[in-house]
Image 1 (cartoon, rainbow, N blue to C red):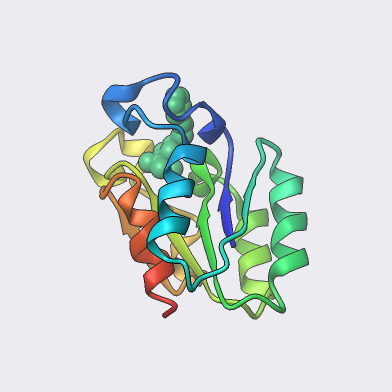
Image 2 (tube, rainbow, N blue to C red):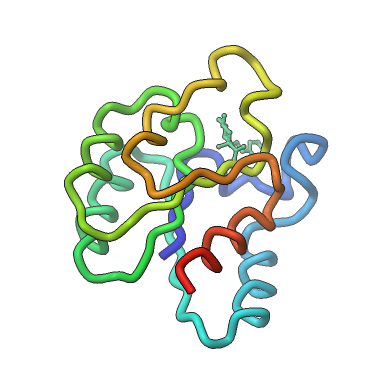
Length: 134
Ligand code: CA2
């Protein structure tokens, strides 16, 4: 299960110099083509509680969750607690290198309860995360 958080629905539309010029749906098509043996589901929400509901919904039965919680990664105790409370492992992904950006992006509230973290590898970071479950 790939879960994207706030503003990631704008990928390919705004700020291509930071996040690239491709929509996530376009990348997802390629990902599914490249990994035909993996059943990849996708969910995006701009709403913190909806992300938490989705983590609860899939967090006890799926093989893995790949989560880019967007800006909530830096602020959300509630998403941290949701990840800590489920049994499916979560890999945290960031498209950009959060450590090379503003100070407020250099800490994630989520990393300590995740299986691993991938950042700064562009959209390909999602593939690396999915492949980590194979
Ligand atoms: O690098 C990442 O993947 C981030 O999680 C993206 C978040 C940002 O708040 C994190 O610090 C790092 C923001 C996503 C915003 O995405 C946009 C995409 C296109 C246009 C505008 C925003």
